[in-house]
Image (cartoon, rainbow, N blue to C red; front, side):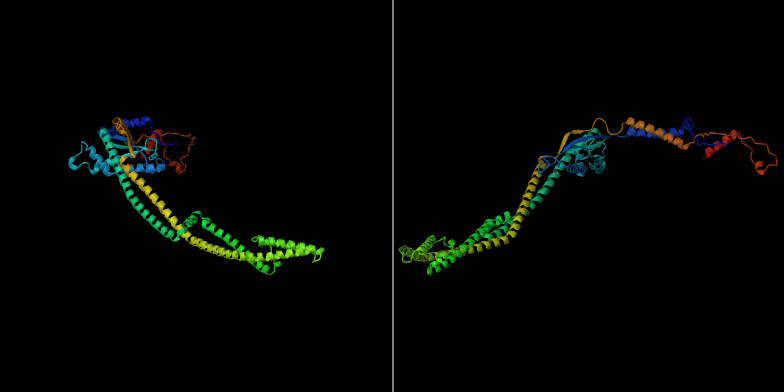
Length: 495
């Protein structure tokens, strides 16, 4: 039996194909190479001019430092704004007007610059970061513009940069002016609110009168330990002392009234009631001593004894003096009692007045605190608005006096145009033509077949009689090797 394998072409087979069918690969290769050569010869040069720029943040009102960005997002936002300004139609139109029309411009199509020229220039304008960095991560970036002429590319880069600076200054001035007008309105509103709050606070303070200082202290301290509160405490203590003294005086008056009728009643009077009457206290002690002495003498002597009689006379004399002193003390106690009543009434009236003042201040404290906080809040709003207005005016003044965008040197177009050179394009065209020719050759021709033949050993066949079965007699005769090779070639070609 014969086994057929897939054809495997060799380099010799491919070479024979190139030799047998030269037009199939030479014609596509020549066409592609010719087109590439024509493109390389006719392709205009493209020059790219680059202008280095450096951007900074505004110095006024910058908490991160004068001229420093607070974060990278702020710097990236500013650079994206500059990119949009650089691609603005008015900026590009002004730059093209300054540079002028190119030499091949057809004036019959319209005035320069045309809308197509502005659109073409906008497609070539780019803002790129330095190599190895991300856009918005560094303060330095490059404005790049392409043109067919190196000199014109430099002029366009210079003109676009100049118009970018001018337009950016105008936008800063317009933005600052708009902010100034808005903040001026905010400051006027804040001042009006402050005046209203001050007027309401003045009305309330005018109703307080002399207790304004107490109300302010009560609102500021918040603990309630004000001078008026201390006065209430002192008056309460004085009233308590006056009432105690008044009770003592009344009790003493009762005792003195009883002692005026019977001096012996004075002997039982407590000494604390006689602290204000030292003479009575001394006579009381003398009477007690005389009575003791008389009792001692009567214990050993008769009443008619001279010493006893003298002691009894002394005791009687003390009683007479005591009675006279009681009358005098009673008048003094009555006067002191009247004075104590007046002091008690005065302290009670003053205490009532102080408490009413304190209660009134307590009712006004919440309203006064609210008005005071409202005035302070509006004052802070006014201060913030005035500070922002000052910063906006500083930014407006700096928008014309200083620039956030600075050039670094002059634009440069380099020494070579952009993209591959003519030689490179020609070589790539020839190589591409050869590849195209080989592809066309392989797609339009068939490779010669190749087969591997293997015949296993055939066991010997015994001769059979003519009367064998019909299937053996109908078997076709075996084929030779040449016929088998031809059939295999046709099979591969058909496949």
